[in-house]
Image (cartoon, rainbow, N blue to C red; front, side):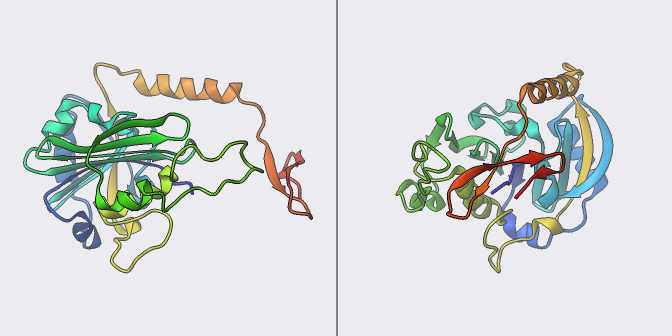
Length: 257
């Protein structure tokens, strides 16, 4: 599994129903949405995308669309370890509506999602194998029940890990169920007949700059570059003839079999 998301969705009703019939994005309406959510921020147009490809945009880029009864914003800046700390202005903009945050990152098996009803937080969950349960507020949704009941354990594979998986389920698997249960589509896994197709939902692209922190994106990019420079060379693993997991030799073209 390799899906990543940074989604904020404002909805008047069934999200999946709107997505299944989503019209092309309206530039004026979408620009007005961003002006409302990010007052005073500098906005520069960028290339467009789709919900399937743009739900995890590069840092500093925002993909968005305003549809009948539904607003979608994709931005890494909403990927909070504690979703309950979402900036107040973004929550207040959901008055009279349902607000859904969905964030996950496949590299660290992290998932977070939250739901507000008319500005009131009713559910927030954030967890990863390294940090455990970071936030758990409100009653679980029905789609969560089988996971907490232990019906979807992560198989223990000693070849890959010295210890069993530290959570009763894989966060990314629950993340896909949360996407379907809350937003009516999935990014990976089984596609059902009534699932919306995220690749058919167009999004407009923008570069948003916070006037109180104009160097935010450059600072983030520098931190990422420094972190990458401290990493060792990549290692690749495979199975030998007797089925044992072994490290594969690497040349300039990549792993050799």
